[in-house]
Image 1 (cartoon, rainbow, N blue to C red):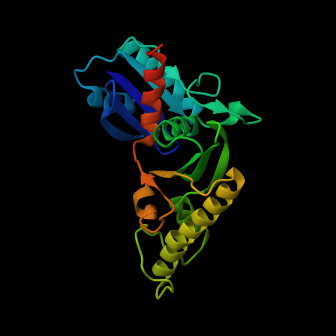
Image 2: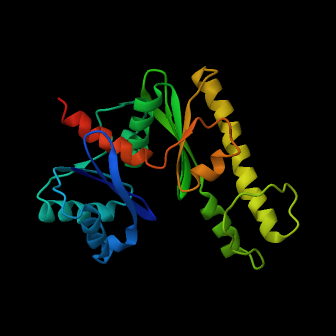
Length: 251
């Protein structure tokens, strides 16, 4: 069994995988790595299974070492820490490869394997990120925008009268309340942003057909109003990590 850990700014998405698929997964607050609680949550996820290997994608450098230490001490495995220096499953055509987030590389690996090239991943996490794979199968860069929760949370924090809202579907296009107006801006506004960026990416990649896979917390909600999105896969990043391990052990 392989342990997969996608360490994000807000949550760590942990999974366990067999030879061909992810078997089980859970979300753990990333902050808990600094207080010892996350180790217990990962141990509970693993249970009595034998851990034969591990792959980490981390965008929180100070959390990486506690995770590596846990894996080495508890399960006696030395994990693969995914980076531009260790990736072998997707090419990189980018001027500063060391600055690419490991989660974005994992997304690119999974998208290329599942949808071919060119293809695009839209990840609805703390930020909304686009990861772009060109027709040669290379990761060539992407786009970053504030996440939906980050945007609405910022409005709440920086204004006196705008409330904190729960992001959900809305059919309205003219808000009849402050909350409804904010929902329209978040949901329909972000769909418009994504639609326009996909049009421009098609032009950039010189293709009329561009597979777009969505992942992350708001992927399913946002994809409902975006026919441009080909598929939704909440486990895409973990699948990329699983493929890293599978590739390394098939040589």
